[in-house]
Each structure stands twice: as structure tokens, then as C-alpha cells.
Image (cartoon, rainbow, N blue to C red; front, side, top):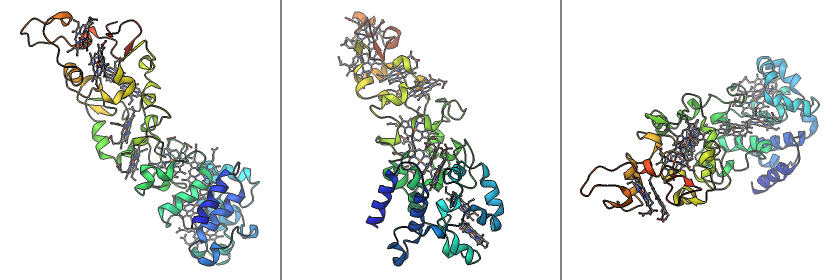
Length: 306
Ligand code: HEC
Ligand code: HEC
Ligand code: HEC
Ligand code: HEC
Ligand code: HEC
Ligand code: HEC
Ligand code: HEC
Ligand code: HEC
Ligand code: HEC
Ligand code: HEC
């Protein structure tokens, strides 16, 4: 098994996509049988081409005409392409009159084996998949994509976002139904604007290479900074120190029901009088941001008042 994985890794390094990749998948399919495992590369003569598949799987082949994978046929000059790139060499299957034991039945294979088949070509764009929370939880490529039946968003998805995600993420569905929310259900944003479900180096599959703020400041450029006077938590702990990313009961997606409550989590409750303009003994507090308008950072005021 180790050797197989290593071989996979080596192939993934090869530039471009080739029928060599196709051979490899066939090797993957056969690895259940000890004998076949020793066969490094299948015989090119075992590939017979999609036209032959069409004689019995006419509907599937016809429908495949506008599949993005059809581009493989062009790259491979039409030989041994598409169908067999994923299902492995089909000669024995055809000679057996459609013997299903002689073809890679991706619809019935274990998740991990299917993922490895796909990653044989897609590891370049999705190198973190196998260590992503999805892969670790047994959610594989074909949980979200269907090569033959998926078409939404042009990404072969089984359903479009956010419907696809809500099938498994009921908590998040509830969050995006809260009074204040990022307008994902309304189609203004997608889950994939902030997450890469194929895995990243960050927790929560967040899209970003450096700090967590990048995922937010991609759109909210006005709070990106850098500022002469930074508000420490914005930079150090990130936007989610004060904001809930999905949905909230509170205005501005804040984590706390009132601004004062939010600020007082870190700043000791202000004593009456002084710059804060409170009458001695008063219980009403002018919302902090009435004065501290540049709460995300300022180039003019150390106290973020302008
Ligand atoms: C002589 C007719 C014939 C040809 C040609 C043929 N198949 Fe099949 N194939 C069948 C039959 C019959 C079945 C089993 C019945 C079924 O499930 O549709 C089958 C099943 C399959 C399955 C498994 C379906 C499952 O249930 O998972 C795959 C995958 C498949 N074929 C792929 C191919 C590919 C790829 C080619 C071309 C290389 C091809 N077939 C050529 C007749 C054929
Ligand atoms: C990019 C990889 C890929 C390519 C290329 C591909 N398939 Fe499939 N095929 C799959 C996967 C994955 C499944 C499992 C069901 C699914 O996810 O849609 C599948 C399922 C099947 C099935 C059984 C289920 C069904 O839908 O009836 C047949 C038969 C089949 N493929 C034949 C073909 C033929 C014929 C071609 C060429 C036109 C082809 N496949 C090209 C990946 C591929
Ligand atoms: C033999 C190589 C190969 C294999 C194996 C393969 N793919 Fe692909 N895939 C491609 C190529 C080439 C494209 C077209 C890329 C392009 O549009 O430039 C593609 C396109 C896609 C796209 C659409 C991308 C887009 O932007 O429209 C999805 C989704 C996808 N593949 C998923 C899968 C899944 C899921 C599997 C496993 C069942 C799989 N692929 C197996 C080579 C492969
Ligand atoms: C949890 C659901 C989910 C899983 C699991 C998943 N995908 Fe995707 N995939 C998506 C969504 C949603 C998009 C479109 C948004 C995007 O581009 O990130 C997408 C886009 C793609 C694309 C086209 C755009 C790109 O980034 O290249 C390819 C190719 C692809 N997926 C392949 C795969 C492969 C291969 C696997 C398994 C190793 C896989 N996906 C697993 C949901 C999923
Ligand atoms: C505006 C950016 C953004 C959008 C859009 C978004 N998320 Fe998130 N998501 C985040 C951030 C940031 C976190 C991390 C929260 C934290 O660290 O407290 C997160 C966390 C999560 C988590 C981990 C558990 C949790 O709730 O903390 C899941 C699951 C999740 N998101 C799913 C989704 C789904 C499903 C969608 C689309 C329906 C979606 N997200 C849309 C930014 C976003
Ligand atoms: C087939 C079910 C399924 C689908 C569909 C699905 N997920 Fe997940 N997702 C899971 C499981 C299971 C986990 C890992 C356990 C967990 O943390 O909930 C997970 C984990 C996550 C995490 C990481 C949570 C963490 O704690 O690190 C994010 C973010 C996420 N999913 C977003 C999405 C988005 C966005 C979509 C739609 C494009 C989606 N998921 C589609 C099942 C699914
Ligand atoms: C120290 C707490 C805190 C942190 C950290 C923080 N914010 Fe805010 N943010 C606030 C408060 C308080 C408001 C309400 C301002 C108002 O109502 O005028 C707000 C309002 C907003 C608004 C809506 C009003 C506007 O200015 O357009 C956006 C968008 C926003 N924040 C984005 C971000 C982003 C992006 C980050 C991370 C870079 C971030 N915030 C980090 C406290 C914070
Ligand atoms: C893909 C673009 C995009 C990303 C990424 C994004 N936002 Fe937003 N955000 C928006 C848009 C558009 C609005 C205003 C539209 C609306 O929802 O009414 C908004 C609104 C807000 C608001 C004001 C909400 C209100 O109703 O008062 C806050 C606060 C906010 N975003 C914080 C964040 C934080 C924190 C992150 C990172 C976790 C983030 N945003 C990531 C696009 C984005
Ligand atoms: C997560 C903790 C946290 C939250 C929440 C927070 N701050 Fe801060 N704030 C800090 C830290 C840390 C500093 C920098 C260290 C210091 O001087 O106290 C700072 C600095 C400041 C300063 C400048 C202090 C100076 O000495 O010049 C002001 C003004 C300020 N915060 C106002 C607010 C207001 C108003 C809110 C609520 C909207 C708020 N902060 C929310 C942690 C927080
Ligand atoms: C009436 C306007 C106003 C309101 C309302 C206000 N501040 Fe201030 N605050 C100021 C000004 C002006 C300064 C700068 C004082 C200085 O530089 O000496 C300041 C300074 C600060 C400082 C840094 C100096 C210190 O005293 O520690 C913090 C922290 C702070 N405010 C937090 C808050 C919080 C939290 C709230 C809400 C509970 C709030 N402010 C409400 C005007 C206001």
C-alpha cells in the first residue's frame, strides 16, 4: 500500500495530465488482488477507447459530451481517454460482455479509493484534501460531486451552495437564518468565499494563507489597514473576536448584545465622569462607538475617535 501511495505521489508530480495517469488508476482498481498489485503499469492495449463504451452505455457517453472531463479526450488525442481515465482499462470488461468485476466500479468503491482516483489528477489544485476535516470524517469527492449527474455551478456539484452544505451542516443553516447574517441564502456570498472545503492549512477550512483576517478583508477592504494606530484585537485575534461570521441576533454581526458589553470584555467598565461624559451615578452609557468611530484602527487618533 505504501508503495502504491508513493507511486501516486510521483505521478502527481508529472506535469500535465496523461494517459499514464489513466494507467495508474487501473492499477489502483486492481490492487485488491495481490497479483495485480505487482503490475506497475497496465498494458496500453487494454484500453479500447470511449467509442467502444458507447456501444453499450450510449446515454452516458452522449451525456459526457459537455462534461469538463471531455477535455481529456482532446489532450489524449482520443485514445484511451475519458471513460477509462477513471474506470481503468475496459478491454476485459467489454470482452466479458460487460463483466462488472473487470472494471473499476467507482459507484461502489470505498470513499478513500475514489478520492485517490480523483486526486491522481486533482492533487495539484487540492493538495490538502486528505488531511482536511472532510476527508477525515469520510466525506469524499463524490459526497459533493457527481461526475455523471452533477452540473450545478459548472463544478459537477450534486446540488448548488448553500443547499449542498446544509444537507450535512444543519447548525450553519440555522445561523444563516438569524436576523443579521451574511447574505449567503440570498446568493450574495457563497460558503466557498470564506471556506475551501478541499482543505487548507487553517482551522475550519478557512481560505487564507496568513492570518484569519484575510478571509474577511478580501471584501471589507476599508478595515484592512495597516493603520498608524491599530486596535490590538483586530490584528492579533482577528475579526471573529468581535464578530460572528455566519449570523447573529446582534446588529453588525457582533458577538455581544450591546457595544458596551463587547468592549467591557476587555476594557474595565469606565468610571463615571471624565472624557466619557457620564454623569456621576448615571446608569445610561453613551454607546462607545459614538465617539470611538474608527474602532478597527485609525491613522489619526490613538483612541480611535477619528
Ligand atoms: C458489450 C457491452 C458493454 C461495453 C462495450 C461496455 N460495457 Fe460497461 N457494462 C456493461 C454491462 C452489461 C454492465 C452491467 C450492467 C450495468 O450495471 O449497467 C456494465 C457495467 C459497467 C460499469 C459498472 C456500473 C456499476 O454498476 O457500477 C462501469 C463503470 C462500466 N460498465 C464502464 C464501462 C466502460 C468505461 C466501458 C468502455 C471502456 C464499457 N463499460 C463498455 C456492458 C458494456
Ligand atoms: C472523472 C472520472 C470519471 C470519468 C471520466 C467517467 N466516469 Fe463513470 N463514474 C465515475 C464515478 C465517480 C462514478 C460513480 C457515480 C458518480 O459519482 O457519478 C461513475 C459511475 C459510472 C457508471 C455506473 C453508475 C451510473 O451512472 O450508471 C457507469 C456505467 C460509468 N460510470 C460509465 C462511464 C463511461 C461510459 C464513461 C465515459 C463516457 C465514464 N464513466 C467516465 C467517474 C468517472
Ligand atoms: C485522468 C485525470 C482526471 C481524473 C482521474 C479526474 N479528473 Fe476531474 N478533471 C480533469 C480535467 C483535465 C478537468 C478539466 C479541467 C479544466 O477545466 O481545465 C477536470 C475537471 C473537473 C471538475 C470541474 C472543474 C471546473 O472548473 O469545471 C471537477 C469538479 C472534477 N474534475 C472532479 C473530479 C472528480 C470528483 C474526480 C474523481 C471521481 C475526477 N475529477 C477525476 C482530470 C481528471
Ligand atoms: C464538501 C463538499 C466537497 C468535497 C468533499 C469536494 N468538493 Fe470539490 N468542490 C466543492 C465546491 C462547493 C466547489 C466549488 C467552489 C470552489 O471552487 O471551491 C468545488 C470545486 C471543485 C473543483 C473545481 C474548482 C477547483 O477548485 O479546482 C474541482 C476540480 C473539485 N472540486 C474537485 C474535487 C475533488 C477531486 C475532490 C476530492 C478529492 C473534491 N472536489 C471534494 C465541494 C466539494
Ligand atoms: C463570511 C465568511 C464565511 C462564510 C460566507 C461562511 N463561513 Fe463558515 N466560518 C467562517 C469563519 C470565520 C469560521 C470560524 C469561526 C470561528 O473561528 O469562530 C467559520 C466556521 C464554520 C464551521 C465550523 C463550525 C462553526 O460554526 O464554527 C462550519 C461547519 C462552517 N463554517 C460552515 C459554513 C457553511 C456551510 C457556510 C455556507 C452555508 C459557511 N460556513 C459560510 C466564515 C464563513
Ligand atoms: C456529506 C456531508 C457534508 C457535506 C455535503 C458538506 N460537509 Fe462540511 N463537514 C462534514 C463533516 C462530517 C465534517 C467534519 C465534522 C465536523 O466538523 O462537523 C465537515 C466539516 C466542515 C468544516 C470544518 C469544520 C471544522 O470544525 O473544522 C467546514 C468549514 C465545512 N465542513 C464546510 C462545508 C461547506 C462550505 C460545504 C458545502 C460546500 C460542506 N461543508 C458540505 C460533512 C459535510
Ligand atoms: C474589537 C472588536 C472588533 C473587531 C476585532 C472587529 N470589529 Fe468590526 N466592528 C466592531 C464594532 C463595535 C462595529 C460596529 C460599528 C458601528 O456600528 O458603527 C463593527 C462594525 C463592522 C462592520 C460594519 C460597519 C462598517 O464599518 O462597515 C464591518 C463590515 C466590520 N466591522 C468588519 C470587521 C472586519 C472585517 C474585522 C476584522 C478585520 C473586524 N470588523 C474586526 C468591532 C470590531
Ligand atoms: C465575499 C465577500 C465577503 C467576505 C469574504 C466577508 N464579507 Fe462581511 N459582508 C459582505 C457583504 C456584501 C456585506 C453587506 C451585505 C449584507 O449582508 O447586508 C457584509 C456585511 C458585513 C457586516 C455588517 C453586517 C450587518 O448587517 O450589519 C459585518 C460586521 C461583516 N460583514 C463582517 C465580516 C467578517 C467578520 C468577515 C470574515 C469572517 C466577513 N465579513 C467576510 C461581504 C463579505
Ligand atoms: C478582545 C479584547 C478587546 C475588545 C473586545 C475591545 N478591545 Fe479595545 N483594546 C484591546 C487591547 C488589547 C488594546 C491595546 C492595549 C491597551 O492599551 O489597552 C485596546 C485598545 C483600545 C483603545 C486605545 C487605548 C489606548 O491606550 O489608547 C481604545 C480607545 C479601545 N481599545 C476601545 C475599545 C472599544 C470602544 C471597544 C468596543 C467597541 C473595544 N476597545 C473592544 C482589547 C479589546
Ligand atoms: C463621549 C465620547 C466617548 C464615549 C461615549 C466613550 N469614549 Fe472612550 N474615550 C473618548 C475619548 C475622547 C478618549 C481619549 C481620551 C484621551 O486621549 O485622554 C477615550 C479613551 C478611551 C480609552 C483609552 C483610555 C482609557 O481611558 O483607558 C478606552 C479604553 C476607551 N475610551 C473605551 C471606551 C469604552 C469601552 C466606551 C463605552 C463604554 C467608551 N470609551 C465611550 C471618548 C468617548
